[in-house]
Image 1 (cartoon, protein in one colour):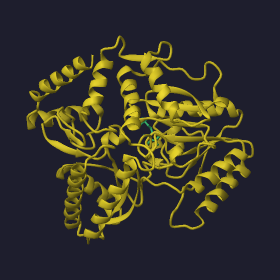
Image 2 (cartoon, protein in one colour):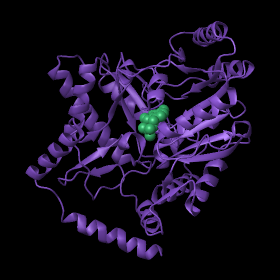
Image 3 (cartoon, protein in one colour):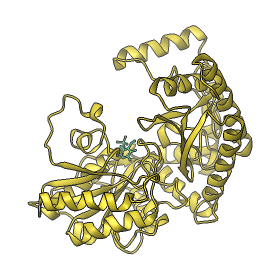
Image 4 (cartoon, protein in one colour):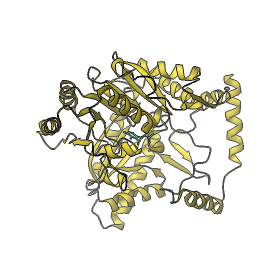
Length: 442
Ligand SMILES: Cc1ncc(COP(=O)(O)O)c(C=O)c1O
């Protein structure tokens, strides 16, 4: 069967080689897509076929180095042979999508793979398609268990998803403009490495909320590494102190690992940080090729609360399970695993870049395969100019954080030294170009 899948992958690649768009066709395709979406794409980027690893091929035949991976989706980069063959075999199964009424073996395989990494307390898993759906399910389980408590706590600068409820939990006013709000979300400051009293300050804010609305909080959302917020994290004692207080006050501890999943050196960041004793619910997505909510026994909801047509696509679930197997069997996980080694390689490369262009490389943060830094003074127009210039130089990255803005990388876990070197060379060129264009010292 694997041979047949391999032959199909070859045939598709062969056919795609003949389908490269001319510059005119490419421009028209981008224009059409933009018109139909109601706004242009952020980058003039339509994927084609023929990429490999960290290199993505665009539909006009050009190649870019992809250090953002569809915002964290392509864990093993593009056109990974093993994942494509897994996908081809799964695509020939009887059903394209599977639902909660009639799941198939892929749903079973994926659920088992996730629970293998979830620690002793998280016993159940509910599959879904997007990170937002997994978070919505988490919220419903929390509300039901803690009813009539109706308030939620979340970190400042956090991101939770794009539904109307999650847009309120997300701490970005522009993302909820015009939406009717419930007014039941309160925020706690995230860890500030510049402030030695950061933990005490966050605890004090948490306590003040708990005192202002006694018995009204159902849970607190922990995004352990704030991805959209600028790839910022905190030392484990910061999370432990807040989680302990939440437990004392009877709040659910809910961890959002949609962006961190498979990127921090463990499958779940909460295990990397040793927080398994505190966590009641965890959501994941992106690199999973679908999404899931894992939860402990007491949060198992009453019948009727969660359902939904789709558990996931057969291909997404098969590939998600295979990604987990590969992370395990190819040595990516653990303190000396390949993701931890990648983190050190990237840190060294950033140090080198900061020596070459000291004024262009501001504060940097990152873990495993997710990294960000403040370029120059982090002004929004400088960040946008850099993203566009990187694109022109052949490097795909994305922004994160606000005031200061950052450049963010969500790299494939198997990025090679040569790809890393090529990407940083492009980044350096882009920094120099923007410095010149904006009259910035670098
Ligand atoms: C931390 C976090 N939570 C939730 C989401 C929402 O996931 P999705 O876009 O798949 O709905 C994202 C997406 O960026 C995220 O980064």
